[in-house]
Each structure stands twice: as structure tokens, then as C-alpha cells.
Image (cartoon, one colour):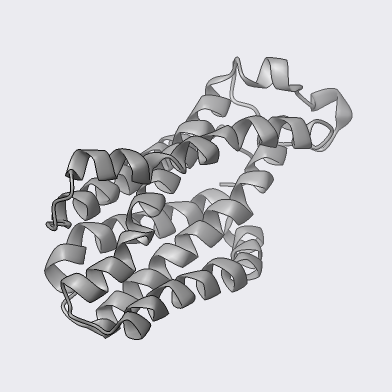
Length: 208
């Protein structure tokens, strides 16, 4: 389909049956799946990494999850404000590149509790941006009339991504070397950022 500018006009709204036949839908879906998979893979490993690799106490290692949850929850309103000012694709692009760099560098730079907490904050912020931005992108791409149904279809990517830790555990096979998991998650996040860049260059959304 030709490049489509987001609109709230009902005559421009696209229903779910048509939406899933557009390249825009699948680019959004792929971005959602890639970035969420990267985040899901590592967030469960962060406290374990803190205990087993950094030799932190269980309480200090668990603090990383609290920091993740804080930035994931309270970051969403801030993400919404940034989306309004700069456009969701710009916010997502910067965030996903930051997450990719963080995860790729994680095995080499996270050597104490402070870098661990910073990495957890970045991962939490990335989740906040993702969950705040995709409803907006759905409305921009396909209109608001069928937003619930269209976003529900896009959200299947998030559901699929939630299975990624199980796959990662199977691949690791009980290994205590966490580097492949973090690097793999970084690659997934970077790939998601590249899809966002492709969407920006294609101009498929009104706000970019």
C-alpha cells in the first residue's frame, strides 16, 4: 500500500483484516517482537547475574528488579510526553539503540552494583517506551476507530516475546556464562532499532 499518514478520520480508518495485510503492520509487529524479546531475555537474568557473577547479596541483586519496575511504570507518562514532542519513532529509535548498546556491553562493563542498576533502569525505560508508544503508533497507522482490535493483534508480538526467556534458557543449557544471552538480546534490540529507522525513512507514519 502507499505511504499512509495517520489520521483519526473514520474514512481513513483501517480494520484489522486490512491492517494485517499491510507492510506497516508487520514492521510494527516485528519491532515489538524483537525489542520485547531482548528485554524479556535479560530482565530475569539481571538479579541472577548480580548474585552469581558480581557476588552481590540477594537483597542488593533484587534491587535491580525494583529499579526496572520503577522505570517501566513511571517512565510511561514521560514517554508519552516525549512522543508528543518528538514523535514516537524518534523516541523509540534512540531508546532501542541505547538498550542495544547497553546489552551488548553488559558482560564487559557491568562489574559492580551501580552499572547493574543503571542497566536495569535502561531496560525498564525501554519497556516503558514500548508499551507507551505502540498504541499511539497503531492509531497513527490505522486510525482510532479500530485501534483496540488492531493493537490487540500487534500485542501478540509481546505475548510471543514473553516466551523468549524459555528459549534462551534452553539454548544456554544451564551454563553460567551469561554473555551470549546479553549479547543476543542486544542484537535483537539493535535489529528492532533498525526496523524503526526503516519506518522513519519510508515515511509510513504521520508523526516520525
